[in-house]
Length: 423
Image (cartoon, rainbow, N blue to C red; front, top):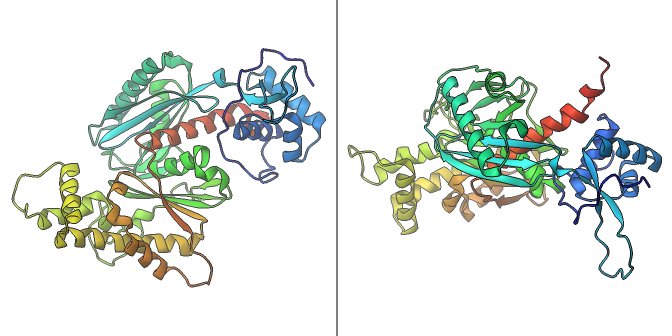
């Protein structure tokens, strides 16, 4: 074993990142595979890394020495078995060096922005939320990002120049590989090169993605998805979104615009969707769809408009109290949601479907009759239907997904295949 280059960390770090099955991604550089195995484990011995990846211990020793020297990994005290009564120096394991990099994740919304800073070991340094102004021009959006970063860095006690990457999520059609926003309700412009503009304004690498994909990334890196190869996340807020993980990898489609569940059609020539088309799923399930019918059910036609959250809260309270009109609105939305979920199951056969987002507090959307309707619409194969779970991480769910996007950017930049290409 190599001589120690620095004191051992006092305790083994917690792992994060996808727990990819051994040998499932052999196209990645070996040093990156080793790093990601250590990151996922939190603390792991060199011998176990060699066993997991099916490579020689000598190769692991050589490459981990390089990763330690480069400042990506460190040696930590491995936890002893509780039955181990031996004394002396604790066994040594590998862990991610937390202070190697820091990244920021931001979820832009029409109501509230979420921001988080994580270190390279996935530990939260600071997090905050800020009210949103709604639709903003590109220049106004860049100013918002600038202000949010300044605030969260101040809370973390770090200089913004210490950030190595920024991940940003927002609703709409986002071409993640090119960094362009094809359409978003937050921007009046279309086909906006948001990532490039943000990099020029903020002076650090920026990756962007659809906000539903961020929830899938959060589950993949920090949640139940770490141990599940195939799962789907359906988000219900101002719109309906979906993130899909296949074989431990986020699926975005050939053009980076896949998984727009909210814009699958459930009614020909149906209700008008905010995307401009008719009959989209979200035009029957999202909050603006519920609000459209709530005004009638609550007898507020011609009266001053209530804030959306207040209007929906009143509608939900009425439904809880047994109001037939209010209950019928949630029941109808739940049936349309059941159609969408059944289509997801029939198309992709995921092991787990996670429901997330602010609208999940309206339990009528996922009541027993909704899930029963979904099961009725799923192909009858004689096998158990996928699990359906409701996850409520809180306001920073999306920010963690954006930070995972930034961490992935940093890892690829410093350890990925592009780094090993000849100059």
